[in-house]
Image (tube, rainbow, N blue to C red; front, top):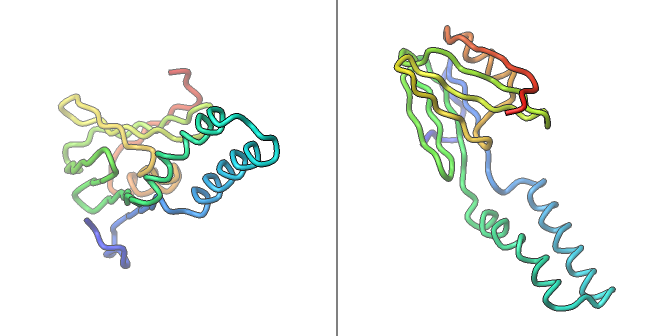
Length: 150
């Protein structure tokens, strides 16, 4: 795994932790709503338990704090997330497809010359402009699609 220090010259690196301020605020807000339903409105125990269930996976992820990173060097494209790992030589890449979805998120897919494709997980996908600039600097073709249904 790449260290979190300064990247080498010419290396594009993007890292993300599960422990972010936004994650903690969302979990605390949801727990506060569930607690308010129980304490202020005297909601039934089974309703409180049912509404508290979504907190369990998010608390587990917060405790584990899996790191997700993406790295683009002069000759390799690599990433690691909780569920996916890839290491692709730039010479094998035909193009990268960046799709803007209706919620304005970006879905990035790496298409290789042999016809396979690898979808970057959302947690390792950097901002579209930064990713597109880094790819074009290395001579990789980038195709854009905006607001597709599927």
